[in-house]
Length: 194
Image 1: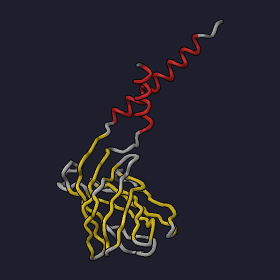
Image 2: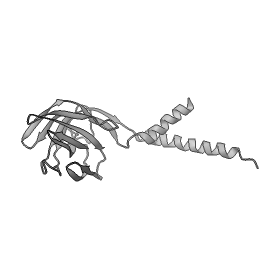
Image 3: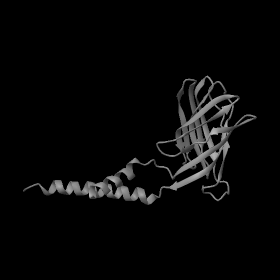
Image 4: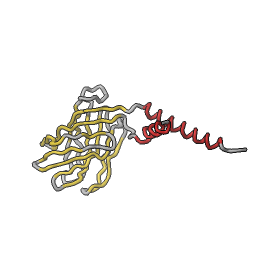
């Protein structure tokens, strides 16, 4: 039983993404220039190993987008970069209070894996936090690769869950890990005969 609890604490301290919260947003629409597309399938995009996806119709053609990287650190310059079939890309950005972002891959018609940075302002009431029920307003970021360079699609949605990860979890997990290491060291040294 003790080993199970300890393993759980170590997993918490090492295996959870270091984000302030696990945020789930249901996407409601995509704005692409003067065209607004209502999503045909509403899926969630959130922090963690399952980023989710979304899909719909755009100019009569099916499209899909899926999350690659999730960002919620405020006031720090971050980068979503890599190489896609359309070429190299590098988005540098800094999030403000109440903003989150996803580095996404976009697939439309014959064009696949178009990288796009989706920044959203999810602090609808302006109190500095993000609560369930608030709407997220997309902030368009110009695409860096073809076939739509310079176009800035933006996605809107609704916050459906916010699960805070308190700092106490990190402290508790790292403390248990330290105790485990100390106990193991103590056990090994107690077997030494002089």
